[in-house]
Length: 343
Image (cartoon, rainbow, N blue to C red; front, side, top):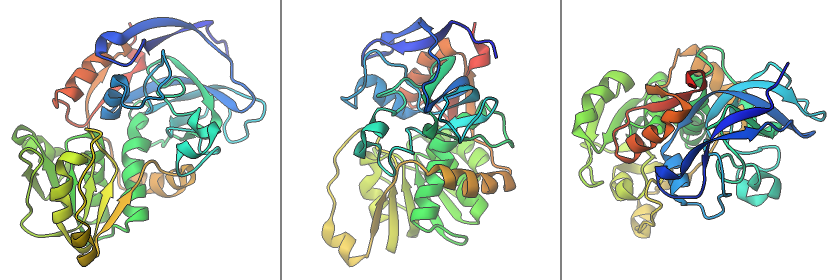
């Protein structure tokens, strides 16, 4: 395959406002022996990207290209790569899982491969990265839409189903249900046969949430506080600090509070006595192992005809607009950069 010498990327000069984004021409680098070169099809913009842009993680490289949720086609593979080959359709899995699992902070090889933080991510036409940072894209949806599957659907599957044991007949509350992760959890839980109660901070979003996620009920949290009429088996906590206490109190004895998000990077008070007396399980979870994604989640996703809730597709140049929408709480579902929309 003939490859260009240069490619375009939306580069972040340094952490800060969206004014720090700059469209740049970069020299295309061929992959090293353990790397692949991916032509990006789509890149989902997440609230974590907003946190990354603002400098929430102090080890972010400067300059950098954000975007830890992307999909594309392998156009070149290093000599030692056996898991992938040219032409494979892939989705990113946050970091090189061959180097470390479950935490990227425990091995140098994994730390160096964290998309958007320690290596360049998907706000670009091309990404070169370690082969262990990619899973196979499902064929049931477009490659562009597949960009968001690992970080949203895969994450909640691993957290609530694999680790916390969510099953048919359970009741689950989902905070941040209008967002990418929350809406994915609602869709997965409904497909499993669960009762789903969505929690949102905006009454204006309730109708869209009901129509898109099929939640059995939607509750509006006021300043992070909400109360359910009956306790639940699990709460997927995608918001973190603002709703943490209400989520803890919403659980049945023996219930699980599953933590996968923290939008304010905050610290919470934990009532230890309450957790002990009610046998509360608190489970933190990040991404999903590649084998579990490929062999367990994707068949479930395909079998149930699931699709992500996508609000809007933008070009590479439109990514700053997506950051504004996320920061202003105006996003519903996902906003995805479609690289075919490049001007």
